[in-house]
Image (cartoon, rainbow, N blue to C red):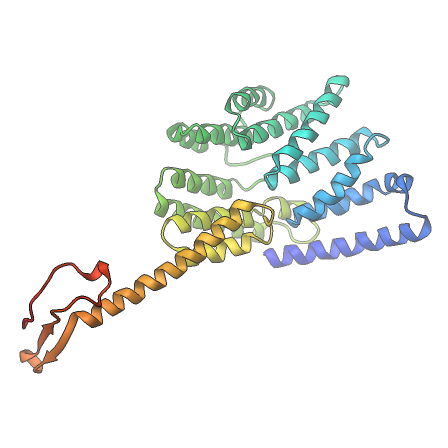
Amino acid sequence: AVVSTQSTGEWLLDNLYTIEGKMNKESEEDEADEVEKAVLLYNIALVHFQTKNFDKAVVILEKLFKLIEPLEDGLVYKICFLLVECYLSTYQTEGAAIVVYYLDKQMAAKSSDSEMHKARMHQYKTRLFAQQKCLKACKREIKNVLSVCGTTASSLFLKSEFEYLRNNFKKSCKLLNSAPKTCPSKEHIPTLYYNNFGCMHFKMKKYNLGVLYLSQALDANTKAVKAAPQGCNSTMYSINHHYQILYNYGIVLLHAGQPKAAFNCLSQAATVYSRNPRLWLRIAECAIGVVQKSQENEQIQNCKSNTVKAIVGSGIYRKTILNTSFQNLPKKCRFAKFKSTLS
């Protein structure tokens, strides 16, 4: 499913870049031309975002953000919202805060903005403050989200995340269980549900349960992507959280004592979250863990072979003679001092 999504995205990008190339040939590239191409560039950035190429999307959107003043209001909001989404998806809170501050000023100057834009702004602020660990500001924005949007799935998931950050896991679980099973934004609720439960059990240091829930989240995500309409359809892209779940899955596997499996998950996640320094740190921890496990297994094998001095007899008369010298054994294997004996 992920492969078909990527190939569809590549087909769209090829067509969009072909159009951009024709426009560049017709006129010299200057600031005025960039403004005229704003819609095309926004669509290119949108495809990059949907195919999880966040870095490429950010480069284009930052370029448009500098030329945003002469653009129409509707396009301005689309560019800013997508840029904030890219920043939050890659945990670049400083960039997100700049765009949110700009949007705040714009909305304060124009009282005619729709409730949908205001609700979206409150949601972005909640996510931003949650990533910055500003819990007081986050709590205030959650109240605004609930007052504007009501008890929708997205608002309850945001409130659940807030309680998760406060280590109030019981309330966080209760909120997840009370969330509606459908979402207006066409998000696949079971995928998000299992992912959040996996993260919660990780925080509670119940790593094996976390592994179970996140494996269920991966399965639910795969089924959702396969069931989505294929082709140039935004639903197929928006519900796909494959790499985000892989990142969480890898972290939990690492803490559950499975560094090799964790390394495989995090290596795949690195293709999307390459700017996340913590990800590379965790990959290094996985590599160290794999080496340590192989060394421990080698020590155990040496321990077993050096413990037995000889085997005499056969059949029911077979006996094992244990070694008396344990100087060459690893420290972990030196449990006690024995004398040679038959057993």
